[in-house]
Length: 233
Image 1 (cartoon, rainbow, N blue to C red):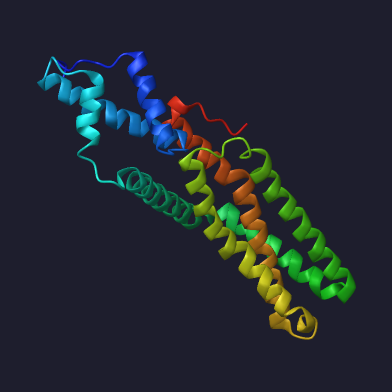
Image 2: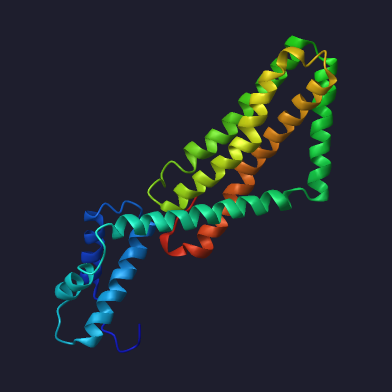
């Protein structure tokens, strides 16, 4: 765009908002980006032809778009944001194990390792069950409370998709293997080690998903999506 372009007025911007809604653009952040895209295209056309109306300029531009333009627009945006969050989660995991956190992680592992050895089968199963319930409560409390009212943003949806990969890696897989080795854990030292490692991995994920990841999301929303006024509080 250049400074000589005719800027759209508020009624024309609202028309574009309504127009995108009619094309089933349900995500507010995508809708605003698409409105900006359409507005820029209309302004480009009107800057070249001072006599053309807003409606005609919009009609001429949208007539050049592929039939599946809006679907592709959302799909491409989704791919970009999903890749962004996966990279960001990956970088966090790589940076997570600082010396203090490594020390705390080792302490948690040793605590579980010791308890699983000294407790009876029923008692350490109870300990594990209590830990699992507490971790699941913490995870779902965040997802259901802090994100329940902001489901119509693609940036939030792709954040969930990105975090689900790490839920599988650091929570579901460890809990699955812990369940598989339960019967032999007391007799097998390797089983107790795996049991302790699995419980430790799940605690790390719970801490990350309940405290660190939400802060990371809010910081990114404040930097890149300040105009949307999205708050996790």
